[in-house]
Image 1: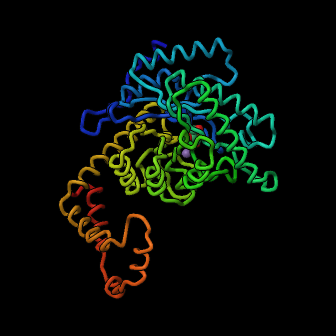
Image 2: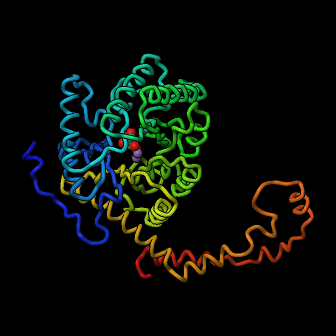
Image 3: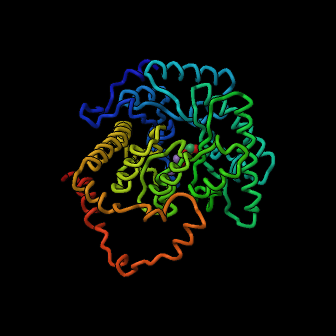
Length: 403
Ligand code: GLT
Ligand code: MN
Ligand code: MN
């Protein structure tokens, strides 16, 4: 191990203003930089990357922490003795390199036992086993310091529509999350759950497919305060949705507990591309939102390097995610400081926002009758030019670096 850890860094974090630092709260899943490039059409292209090496290299690049599934760290069939040794070494590495584990999760999708799902599988034996595996994985995550626990549906879905009652599936999911919330309370853990939607893949349809579905589901739980969302750029984009808007809706109800940053070219399979590598404008608005609207959680990258890359390329990828985030952060500051843009925004959003007391605040019968009796100059309202072309062009000029 010492030899492995002494291997020199293949990429330089750089010393310019975009170089990531621990204060930026960047994290990566062990499964992200550890991704070996296997896809449905081709085998592994990279060797296993030891988790201890990941801790060291990510720390040197400026990352703050690491996330993991139980089996990213402890192999599926490990004995209790092996588990304890692995955990001890990992803790030591975290300590040595000043890295934290803010989030952990369970692998409920890789082993064939989960081929029909986990909490929503038709087989009660599989559902019970999924609960056991999750409780053990929660114990492991908490032992390593996790304060957020992610549930990505994985194979919670359906291929043969007739095989499952979709209402029963939602009930089963609710029962499982309720049970696990009670388990966390029972253990006295300081842990919140973050549910991660995805519309499809690996199943043809996944239950609770979007941020909107998840938010509605959370409000039906026994402990809704303990549960929020973990939206992922690629997943909402696969559903053809605007990620930025979904995240804003979650933030507005204080449900953005975690976020998976990556990128995606259009509504296709899950591409998990380097953050900001494709949707430049959406990524800009996303970073602007997170930075300006009080999101304090980890900036987690759930992406992986192109299949063409060797280990050096993996570190180029990881550094790229972080630097690009910081570049957008800088652009957001420029946008906020741009006098012309701010003047235009004030003009666009100007005027008496209460419309003489008719708008905002609570309903009253008096307000309703005043509104019903008001005269509106509809033609004047309709003739307004909104100057959005100008605003959007100025935004593009900020992003492209000419302002
Ligand atoms: C898997 C998935 C991700 C989830 C991870 C957490 S695992 O890689 O594609 O989106 O966030 O379970
Ligand atoms: Mn994800
Ligand atoms: Mn993904």
